[in-house]
Image (cartoon, rainbow, N blue to C red; front, side):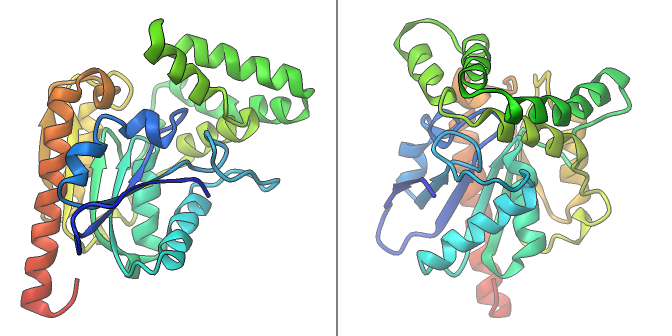
Length: 271
């Protein structure tokens, strides 16, 4: 696995940052590293098929991404961490709690939801078609797949040095796995069990999000007992485009979850 680490203060609690679809750890979180590193030991991973992430012949599954994070914490001898998930990283964080609850000290869920495929037939068709496109990408010759990723990269990034760096990051993706990830996101639904979450949780809600409805984000917060909402006046890419608003909200959400987790430990003897 490829991991970015900010060591943070001695003995600091750990946050593990889980990026969104089509991003990488650095693309999603580069504006947040410094602020979080003042309070936490920060780990950020590239998920399967994304950037420098693991490559596998097995189909992409969000559950396997959660397993990867749990395995990483084992290797680094970290007992527990606060899982911070952005967009696609939100389901991975939720699944980390569901599949490996002993590893999760708290949750911070950003610009994300309990589900992503709404009743809108266009949205269902978009996510549903991802599996077929992913199969075609896996069967296509290498140059064709690379060209596909390059086109996606150019469509999602701007000009200038920052845009070129973002394009270079996205160009590292495995096209088939990334498209399979889109299908997995469209099929994710935690509504049946998200109410069982029993760790301190915060939701960083992007109020001007045109990809993950703020209504869905609020539903996620309402589903988790004691979850606190940290609103941000920003779009789905607020982590980059509105970093001046997003980063302080993210820092405050992580600190809030960490404080509540420590208070819980002091009161009950368990995190």
